[in-house]
Length: 74
Image 1 (cartoon, rainbow, N blue to C red):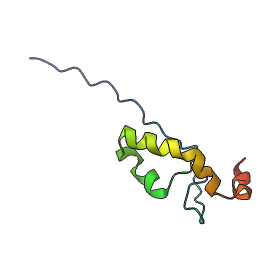
Image 2 (cartoon, one colour):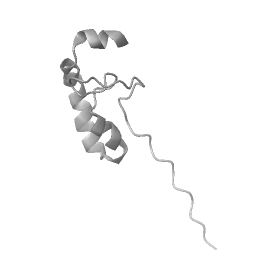
Image 3 (cartoon, one colour):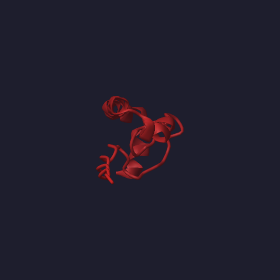
């Protein structure tokens, strides 16, 4: 009887989530990670390349949220 060794555990999915899940009504972005709700919901199903594309955009997205709102989380 041959037994197949168990598959190694998969690497955790890279995520920008910082557990501050508050959506800005004006921009539609999470004020913790700057993703859109649709991106948060689909994150685990996206390819690594799709996630990397979104991650590269997050710094610029921060400017879409008014600074006084972001100050609540500093």
